[in-house]
Amino acid sequence: GNIYYDLRLEVRVCHPLKGDIIYAKVIGKNKMGILATRLPIIIALSQIHNPDLDMESIAIGDEIKVSVLDKKFKLNDKEIHVIGKVMV
Image (cartoon, rainbow, N blue to C red; front, side):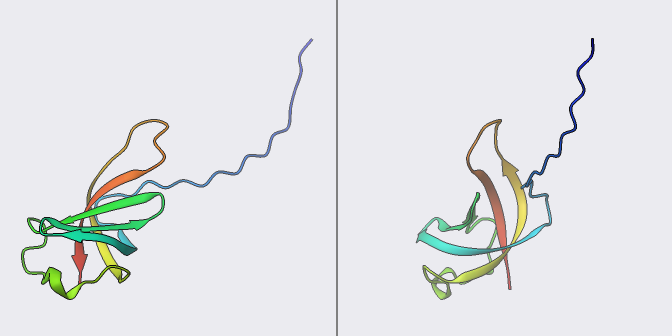
């Protein structure tokens, strides 16, 4: 015999694509750049990708608008690592 099941699934998917806009909170900064987060996304903002940005004008705790340049994650990762560019 066959057994049939009626299933209802609900999922939440987070898959940032190049060009997506994310609003994130700054959690760290140093001379190399800024680290921001919008869980489960961790965003690295370097001077290389943001040459016209005055990094001193952004403080820890600020909410910033970021455009996704690239992402990296593997199966079962708890976080998605993103390289971004600050949108003014």
